[in-house]
Image (cartoon, rainbow, N blue to C red; front, side):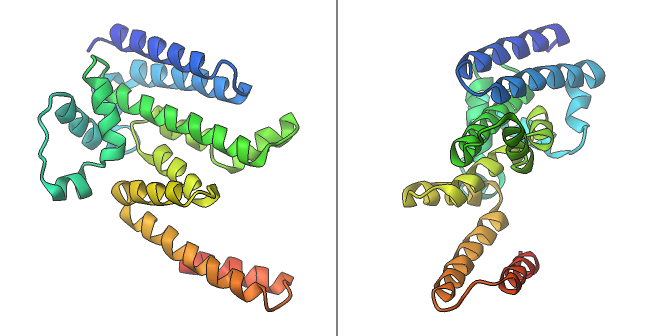
Length: 229
C-alpha cells in the first residue's frame, strides 16, 4: 500500500473517531489528534514495512494474523485460537482489514478505540472536577503518553489495559468475568495475577473487619502486593 493511501485511511479513521468523541471530554479528542499525527509520522519515517520493526517484533506477528483473518485463511485449531491468535485483538482488526484498511492500521485503530474507551471509563469512574485533576488522572491511569504510544503502534497493550480496568472497577460480576476471559486470551499470566490478587484482596478485606487500619498495615499490603505480583 502506498504511503498516500495509508495516510488517507489514517485521516478517514481519525475523522470517524473524532465524530464518535465529539461530545466527550477534550482529552479524548486530543488523543485522536495525537494518534493521527503519530501514526502518520511513523509511516513517513519508516515506511509500511519497517514501521512493524519499530519497538517490538510483536507487531509483525499480529499483522500476519490479521491478514489471515481478513482473507478467511485461519487455522481453526483450538490451541491456535486460545494461545496464539490473540483473538480479542486480532479478530476486530481482521474484520476492519477485510474492508480494505491496511492490516497494521486496522490494529492501530483497535488500539485507539480501546484507549478512548479506557479514558472514558477512567474519567467516569473518578470524575475529576478540574483540568489539573483530569490531566493527573489520565496520566496516572497510563492513558496519556504510554497509552498513546501503544495505540500508535500495532500492540495489544491498550486492550489489556482496558479489560484490566474493567475487571478492577466494575461492580457487575458478568463484566468482570468477561474481562478476565478476554485477558486470558490476550495474556494468560496477567489474568492469573489479577485473579490471585482479587482473592488476596477479599482475604485482606475480611481481616480488616476485625482490626483497625494502620499506616504499617497499608505499607505491608503494598510490599506484599509488589512481591506477590
